[in-house]
Length: 174
Image (tube, rainbow, N blue to C red; front, side, top):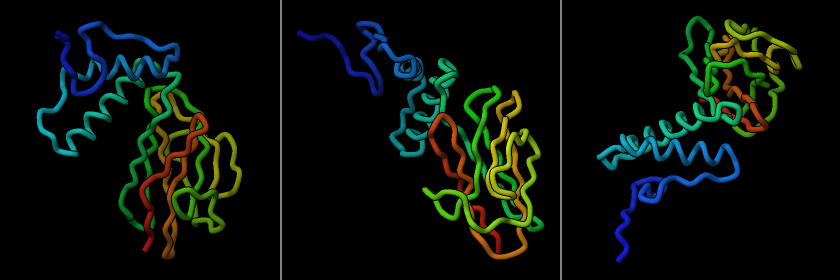
């Protein structure tokens, strides 16, 4: 009779964790095994999503050179300005390509805002004024951009890191 048991997520630790030949896969497997000790007892979608984010965060800490995930927080419209905080997965310098897009999945917009100010992060290159940049994050891993626009318009920040593109929530100017 097989006396193993099934875990909610991840490998059966009765045999010990195994490691693949790819560091990013191994990091995710190990993070999943570690995260089992705090698996949510409820079955709510929000709790499971939060747990999945926790596993991703652990994997990024275990293998930071392969961590591509980032967090984009768009603030509210205040005095014709919207501030966006871009946080990479660990406290490290990262080179990001950032552009304003008209919708998710699009390249740089043709319509520029009045101004874009980088409050944190160093602009390495401006590819198109007020809409497309290469930015170096400080060692904290956090870049902050403020977009100013005096009209009615919607944009999304698109951030490329390690050949992946992440889109922010909508920046809505009314």
